Length: 103
Image 1 (cartoon, rainbow, N blue to C red):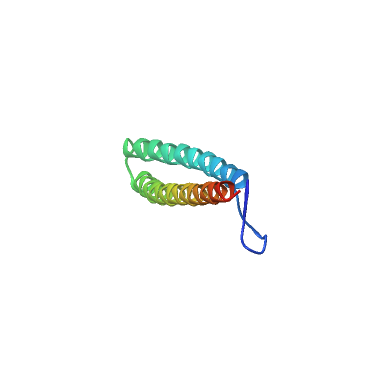
Image 2 (image 1 turned 45 degrees about the vertical axis):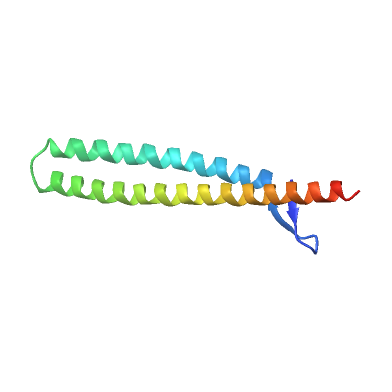
């Protein structure tokens, strides 16, 4: 369902928005796997001694934190997209009801 403004310009395509949300969820899963892999690297580096192992562990933690921030941002984006789609769907239903009741 496409939402159009007064000039007929498409504002929101619900199917496209849902496809975006699905892609965002897939990206989130990939990022979570990467964060888990980095956690494993960090844990493994803790079992070794030396500066190299410590450096690997520190870098793994930095990257894991960055990925967790990306996941958080992605979740915010998904929530916002869902709210916008829902809002316009409700508006569409409201206008549909008004038009049907005026017949």
